[in-house]
Image (tube, rainbow, N blue to C red; front, side, top):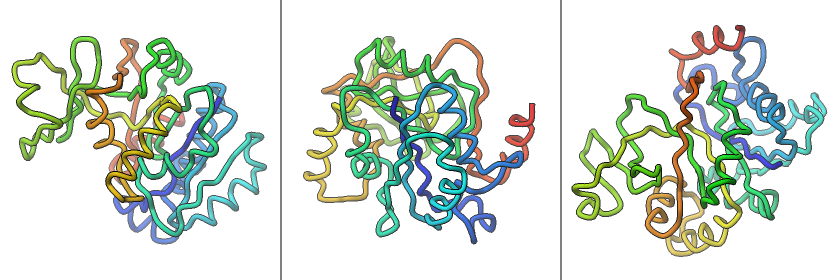
Length: 249
């Protein structure tokens, strides 16, 4: 089973901790956050992992080599020349992620107790182009889902912006759910990403506007399991101490 870990971010919210290391190498409960994510996804059965790098990328390469890749098949998608954002990062890693089976994408700064195998199986049972973890939590930007948990749009509550077509979404009973930093994606996404890339002419692009453009044409599913689980964005200083408590219990 294949997975990709986004470990290329600059970690600006964690300065000064990231002045001399990548965000993925900031330690929590005695281990770099990257190691926590690797161990979590490996325990769920993912054994072929692609990790993108940019900021202090050699530190990640050295760390993986020192630990013999944790016994996994690990590929490095090198973005040190240009940080490609989420959509561009997935497209650059195509050579390792393409094939017959879906792949998991996991932000390095998300710690959770989510059942990753159940998440993967849910995606497979719905045959969606992508399935995105979503939660009911307070934020400024929300994905909009219909009663079948199909993605229909996106909104920014601070600006009032609604995409892709505000008029078509008016009057619909849509749920506002916040993105949880994890996806399961079908390799069928790659031709669509290539077309999107050629149309925009940009190597660097986020996967979020891509999802919003594609949700009218392809099934992009939301996943918010009924069972309780813990979730934390550890990419900001105020959550590091809380994450330490979570990971030590």
